[in-house]
Image 1 (cartoon, helix red, strand yellow):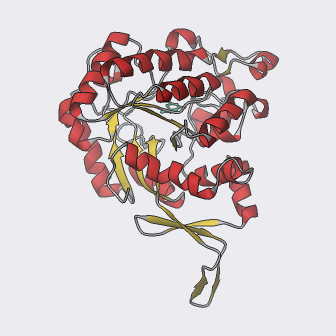
Image 2 (cartoon, protein in one colour):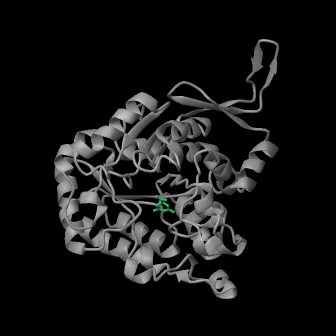
Image 3 (cartoon, helix red, strand yellow):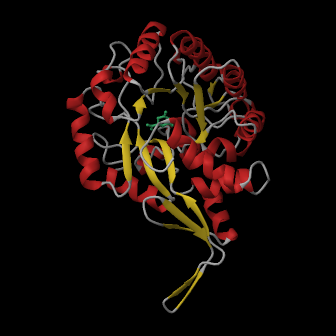
Length: 356
Ligand code: DOR
């Protein structure tokens, strides 16, 4: 992420949050009262459907105020807040404190997610019907829904409520205490690995359920080549499925890891082959949007290297620069496509308010 931020400076580009609908990018100069904007590009405000604002419950990591200030600085005009909070928003009663804090403290628009299951516990469904008018969709992000029958019921409920089900796909029986991708880097450094199957096996299960139930299904933070291939073929078969990946999976691969908590997140940074497949998925439209999975922790929680740090990295301020470096500069996609991946596509898919 640091490299990406530095890169933004070498471009000579900077972000100037505009009004709530747009962001200006450029390397203008200010002379007296005059701002030279001849080299500026105006893009629609970015929309991030996957951020962790940590409030209520974990405000020592981030608050709605600090998180939305970071988002505004990164060019975002709307973010969707994930529900791994305390309390988890699984009913109107538990959503209310979050909505109130958004109303008083957010500097950009924030749409929360509702939890899929009560307390994000994976067993009983949340009160999806009541939550639906207030949420972007439903997710238990931070963990996968392990029980297939619960997931099937959740898809039916989400469909009846007219909302998307956004799944964090992770089969915990395949994670086995891993801290990095199960590949060459893990083996070379004697670190426990997280297999690609822990992600794609659950995607495969859910794609079959989405077909069976007809639910609108969205896969969060995909990181593996197999995930791209599965989603590509489900789309070809006509499933109502979309997916996101995050800038760190496009910018890094495990060869570049350092034993530093800044490189630890879930899912982990995968192999060079996985990154290449993600770039292909971006180029051919299999991947619909880029979301940051902005997930800050306290400094001491990230100080334990790859083994002991908590999983999660911030991303709102560096996402655009990282994506220009990973996608636009090498010619994977033009800037217009990046703007679509970061604003129009997420906004449309989640039916978010604004100019879609
Ligand atoms: O790395 C991650 N951090 N992945 C997740 O799914 C959750 C997130 C968090 O909340 O810290």
